Image (cartoon, rainbow, N blue to C red; front, side):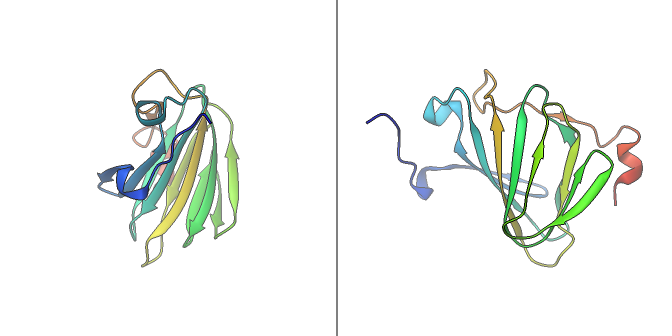
Length: 134
């Protein structure tokens, strides 16, 4: 068998001002070449502002709560079981407008040649994205 079990206690967790990332699959931990999988917790009122992942496609799957999801200049509310696909380089943002935490599963590919396998360009300070910010 080829693979690796990842008990919750061994998953690398990163606290951010807007939530937490639990890196369930990244090259540094699994040796993955094609996938990056992150459980994202958005605190109430928190969110990952407009950004893109150059050369990486992404699926965001809502596990818990309600998330205001932007893809380009279009937005929808994701609820548990809802998902969105984002093309490589597609601009997107995720905000939790509720008073309870929200959880997402973010799956990106291919993995980038770095410890996290994740590449991000923050765009929240640029137009038109800063004008769309709450």
